[in-house]
Image 1 (cartoon, rainbow, N blue to C red):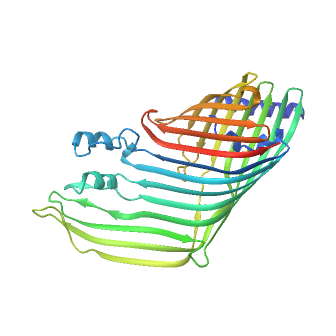
Image 2: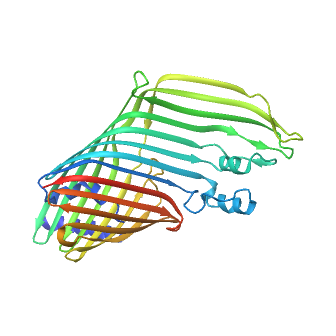
Image 3: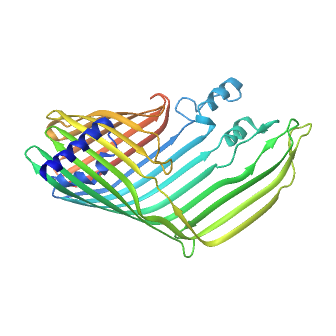
Length: 394
């Protein structure tokens, strides 16, 4: 049996090494199997991040009246699609040996604009053009998560050990907003004339405003950790939908606009559109949060210096999770057990990421801050993130 566990642990380590990103190492519940701290209370910590694929730190003040500059600017959009993501959260964490309990309010907002909308915004309405606007969408979600984690050693033998961990997330929905353009068309002829149809399908609700509104769901994460001498390897799968996040008491609205545009000497002229609006209260909708898997490996180069490798990827693009693989590597340094520094560089598609963290350990009082940027180059960052915490650690 021990040989079987050792073989399984070796496979975990090999997978972590062959699928090189630091991933979210701290999220792996299997690490609790070998937790040394008898008690840790992490006071409310705050984190947030924003990313998009168009605006970056060096093009905010561009002169978009210059056609060449505008063409290069819009050329930054992959397939002409604008995407953005905003995440905000705070959490209170209690860790007692192999158990961890966490209360985590969080908010997420994602935007996807199909090519026709950026074209209309930056180029205006043009003759003889088809505007692709279907599947443009905005998603907003606010929830309170109660997370319970446990790690169990499967075996310990000389200088090797294998641990298994499980986290169960109970999600309590606070607010939901979803809007998507469907069954719509906008194509102008050579004179700039067209008959257009716009349909927006939306769901909305909030706990403090909508009678009968509620959201409930249960997700789970499963992780493995294998320690072998100076190596540690880990793998994790997140967001198993034990009970899908389901919202009830939601208001479902459909807005349909039919109109026409005629060409004129002074430019396009819009006729009064015909608007039809339907609304259904007490609707039910399910939010699917994509599966996400990651693997990592660390190697103790010296007593206070570690090398990190890792990989992470989602099964779909939604709620800040990306299906584009992300690989990363970096170093962490912990001199005198008082300070902790780390630096990680990552690559995800065409995006580079740079993250840095610092912690100060004053006996039982720990402080930590971290931050990072993302962009095609570090000087042209299209996203930023940061977090901070204070903890009592014994």
